[in-house]
Amino acid sequence: MKYINELPIKGKRLLVRVDFNVPLDEEGNITDDTRIRAVLPTLNYALDEGASLVLCSHLGRPKGKRDERYSLRPVAKRLSRLLAKEVTLAPDCVGEEVKRLCEGLSPGEILLLENLRFHEGETKNDPAFARELASLAEGYINDAFAVAHRAHASVVGVTEYVQLCGAGFLMKRELSYFHRALEEPARPLVAIVGGAKVSSKLGALENLLQKVDKLLIGGAMANTFIKSQGFEVGRSKVEDDLLETASQLIRQAKERGVKFYLPVDCVVAEKFDPRAEIKIVPIQEVPAGWYIMDIGPATVRLFTEALHNARTIVWNGPMGVFEMDAFSRGTMAMVRALASSYALTIVGGGDTDVAVHKAGESDNISYISTGGGAFLALLEGKTLPGVAALELCDPEGRRD
Ligand code: 3PG
Image (cartoon, rainbow, N blue to C red):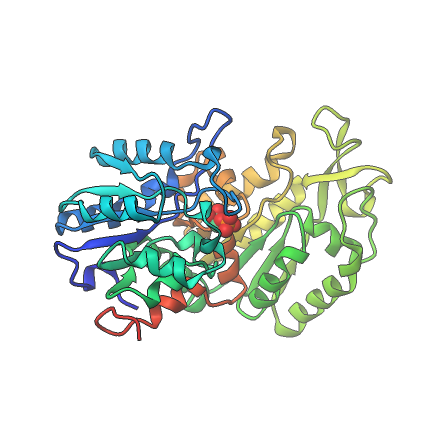
């Protein structure tokens, strides 16, 4: 795969796939612009090379229809401020008028196409739609790591119709940190997996068991493991159909010599409500009818000690219901444990980045991935379709 700095982009008009799928509040204001800032190095490099830029992205899931709530207008404004440069928002992402606007771009100018998912051809990877996108520019750069797990037209299909294709610097950073963490890690390698469901992380757990030295499980998904070991979990969420699978994973860990850690105590609440009565109990003593909301202090100590000699730590998924302050201590304590570690620390997906920001520790983590589903797909050991498509480009950056 070629990266933008290895390709002859001087003075060219480039179609750049970015992931500007940023969170918006009810008034349509951007609440976190990390994903916009993350592609600035690629955009600035291309602009310095005298390229003109046609940026394309999705925002939300408008299901193939125009819906103003998902317009990229706020993104155009924010990007313009970050680059200190005018960014024009196109009325659509394909069509005659858009083509005319693209052809009218001078070196150094930027056009942001309107939401790709206003057209169903995007998610369907429709060849006609992909060809139309490709026709807007002379080359294609994919810097949208966070959507690289989707085989969509602007991620995969488009590479078949462009003269020149490669990846941007964000893609490079994401893939290289991931490689350092899971392909050639400094050991011990520890993975922390939390979040709601075992079912959505089963593939990741199976893959991680083949790679890590220690696996720490927290969050609601730990309940299924705890119950599989014969303990009661009150009214907490459990996936009863996965109890046997959970036991099997624990057995597999043992067979492979992977140290497997489950919570030893927890914060329980009488209701799923921060104002409800709360107590800390050993995992063997969860009261009937109560809810497990967070890992307890003994678990924090256990998990922190397990990280002590780690040289690489990968973390996906919170340890409890951290959105409610009363149940955020476990997750916050783990963020601090990572932040003070000398290990290479990589965090991604499933709100883990939100927790790191909430704890004010984002500067003390080696790398925070911009990917949610894409990061999880890598944890599962999958090849990302967006990356695979770029790998088919020949050494000159042309698709075979
Ligand atoms: C994400 O937020 O994970 C990416 O932008 C992909 O979005 P999607 O899950 O709607 O495809």
